[in-house]
Each structure stands twice: as C-alpha cells, then as structure tokens.
Length: 476
Ligand SMILES: *Cc1c(COP(=O)(O)O)cnc(C)c1O
Image (cartoon, rainbow, N blue to C red; front, side, top):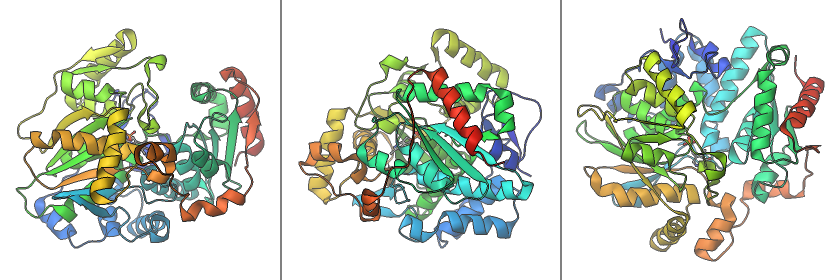
C-alpha cells in the first residue's frame, strides 16, 4: 500500500487522496512516496506495445494504490487525456529532430503548454475524490502567465471545484491574457489587481495565513508542489522511454527546460523507479539549478536579482520542487534536510556535494542558455529542420547540443514545453516573422473579457478584496 511522508518529518504517513487535497504538508514540507515503486525491464518491454493511456494507468496505479478503484481511475485518465483535448491519441508524441534525437512534445494540451498534462489529471482526480467525500474545494492562486490558464482550463466545468486566480493587470502577453480572461465558465474567476506578480503572490499567502478563513471556505491550491502533478509527469518519461529504448543496456538522455524543477524531478523519479536516465537540467540566465549541479551551491536569488528573459516560465528565484530531490540526497533524514533549509533561510544558500552514485540508474548534467543563444537556437533549428520551437524548448535544445558529448551517446529526447505561437515576439526576433494565433483560439478573439478588476496595489488591500470576492462566490 503506497503511503506518503513529509520531507520535514511530520509524524505518520498519508494515503494518496489525502496528499492530493492537502498540497503542502502542515509542517511546511513536501510529500514524497515512502518508497519509489520499481519497474523492471520486463515491465518496460511489455509497455512498448501499450498506448499512452495504458501506460498512464499502470504508472498512476502504482502511486494511487487502493485509494481509487481501477474502473474509476481508468475513467479519470481517459477523461483527462481525451485525444480531442491533446490533439492525438499519443498525448505526448515524439517528433524526430536529428539523428537519435527527438522532441517529446508535451505542449499539445488545451492551453498549448506542458502544464496541461499534469493539471488536467489533477482536476479530474480532485473532482472525483471531492465527490466521493461530498466536499468542495476553492482553489486560490497567483499567476504571471502559463500556470493560470492551464489551471483555469482544467477546473472549468468541474462540479466540485472553483478557481480564483490573481494576475497582474496588463503584465502578461496578449495571448496569455486572452487565454485566461476570455474563459466563460461559472467556476472560473479572474481577479486582476493593479499590482505586479509579487503583490498577487503575497496576497495569496496572506489569505492562506488566515487559518479560519481557509478552513471555512475550503481554500486549496494546485501549485507545482502537489505530488500528483509530479506523478502525472512521470508518465510521459516512461512513455518516451518505451518508445525509443530497445535494450536494457541503453540509457535515455532527456533535456528538460527547468524552472521550479517539477519537470526534471519527474524524470529523476522515473530514474529512481529503475529506468536508466541521464537528465540534463537546462536553465535560462536564472541559473539557480545549474549553479547547484555544476558547482554544488544552492543559492536562492533575491526578488530584484531575477532576470526577465524570453522564457518567463523559468524566471525563478528558487526551485520549489528541489526539496524533494534534496530529501533523497540527505538519505531521507528530515533533521538533516531541516538544517539545510534553516541555513537557506538565514544565509540564502548552502553548499552540497552531490551524490552521483556510480550504480545509480539516474545521473544529472546541467547547463545554461542565454537569451541570445535562445534566439540563435530557434533560428538554427528552423533553418535545419523547418520546425519552430518556443524559447523554453530552445533553452533545452541549446544545452543539450552543448552537453551531448558528456554522456554515452544513446537515444535522446528534448522536452518541448510550450508551443511557439504563445511567444510571438521571441519568434519574430529569431525568424523575422509573426506566428498566427492557433486555430483553436481564434474564436476567443471576438469574445468578451471576464475579469474582476481590483484597484489596489498593496498586497494587504488586494488580499482583503480577494477574500470578499471569494466569500460571495465560493462553492460550499
Ligand atoms: C513551467 C514551465 C517550465 C518549467 O518547468 P518546471 O517544472 O517549473 O521546472 C518550462 N517551460 C514552460 C513552457 C513552462 O510553462
């Protein structure tokens, strides 16, 4: 039976459904499985003939245990990964890029970014568990771009969920604004204050700090620290592995454009489950993770140190999922982990000798691509293959071609995390032309914005107004 523990050592363990609804552990830690389920080569071989949905069921079942019965879990997976939502039966198809190298296309979901893969499943799982418990959940979040639209798109039409998403007025791309603000669904509320993203984020923290309010209105979150999101992402690495690896002696290299370390962590978990994987952690100029993997120093950035790049979803000051990786590095000793995080909060950094055990099935490399290199890479790949990649994927491609030689040559996949049409300025800079708005979105151009403006810039004032709006509109 699969149980979950907190990285900060809280007593006892939880089952999957409780972890799904809890998000962050009450002691401030992140939930991780008590142990990683194992996949032997014979399982991999079997899965080579399976569909994405069959592989998803097998992997997710290992993490859900008996919390959801098989028939219900199959229905949830089939609903989340409806080929009509993801454009193909493959869900995350592989497109050949160069000899032995493919793009693992994770961005074919409804909002054209890889976050759909996890959030579509998460919303369906939550809706099911809430229905079973006869409870409701009101999701509160802040976004500067992609997470907001993927979360709103996943929540729309669900019976037991509502979403209240704060976003800074006029600070997202026109396409992102269109994706969020023109969703017409009674479960979706866009709260749009005058402040910036940090003000929105602080307001969310303030609301969450009011324990009575949080409990009374069942306030929840879908941020990237939810274990179920990592679980959903493990599936496409297993899927990719079964499609390109043909012998138990081969290793798979994956290059992952990284910000909060959720996506790369999922590749690591697939490795901990027994797949032979080399993970390239690719960062933009906000190179917190590259500094860690190459120099053994984890240093979080101050707010004004964060650089604005062409790959905004990777402009981070710290990597929220990194704690899960470090938990394994300290041999799963919560006391040692807490010591490091105390050091982080007082000094802003800690040093660490990475244990790259020689027999481990998973190994890391890391590198950074500058904005200039991103522009050149988009152009280079377009000239060579005719494919247009987005600036996030270009970070992974650039670092991959730089670091490829440092691994045994084997089949490789570059994670494609967004569609280029979402980043028309970056594409125009690289290629000299504008991309058209994708077909599926054109109908939104003519529809009205549905937003609630909050004429405040102060996070306390934003939080209070947000509370009033939530009170008036919650499901209970
Ligand atoms: C969120 C995001 C990333 C970063 O993924 P993490 O899991 O936070 O490392 C990369 N690319 C795109 C397009 C994203 O939306």
